[in-house]
Length: 319
Image 1 (cartoon, rainbow, N blue to C red):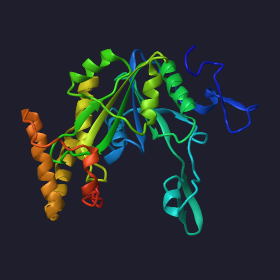
Image 2: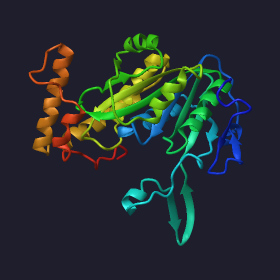
Image 3: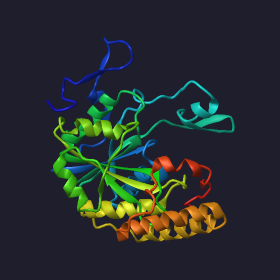
Image 4: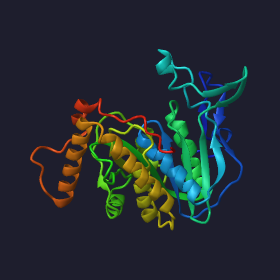
């Protein structure tokens, strides 16, 4: 039985006598019918450093003029009131706007699907769910089957020892062994990781039983930049265009990337300690491409603790 079949239900809250069907969680404005299509996933929060996950997919939505067609009801899946300090609680609460004593807007987590019939492509942009991962996954799998999707591709990122002057290193995780060699042809490295897991990893663990292929494209981006990273978004968009054989015009994104990289380099030049560390990253990156063994082990995430203070967090890519 496909995920989210007619009898699929989940328990909303503590009352086991009030189940809700997946049909009530998914709201459609239209129902695309594609054939052997791909669905791209982007989640904000975990694995969205530099906004590479959400920024890349949103850029593709704009470039292919994809149209929104469905949403997942956010209410059962997100925490709005987290106990603790105001700083901690603020990470979970919806954004509101009050003008002249009146509430003018409140932004609940967005969970939107987009479709491009021309490119046989669906895209999803949303916040990683806090609750009920199994049911959220069922919603995604159900919509995929209903729409003719056979493959899911997640885009994400993590901070590492990659300089902003170089393309991000790209890693992949796959739901089936035969997909690994396919992704390696596009310059992707196999992921090796043990630690806190993401919703993407949970989806990956269930994809095969759901009758779907799933791969991830994870970019290693500069750990010292905590703002939107147009350069990494552009690099990942280029790789996605090759994988999906999309004829995308990335000139505007490439120009914005170059301009932003120059701005970052100018800011880093004013910090001697950070500038020296970036030069070390550049040397290690280039030596790896040349096949030169490093004199010491290549730095990984565990080696970045001594430079936590070397972070640029006040650059606005839109300025």
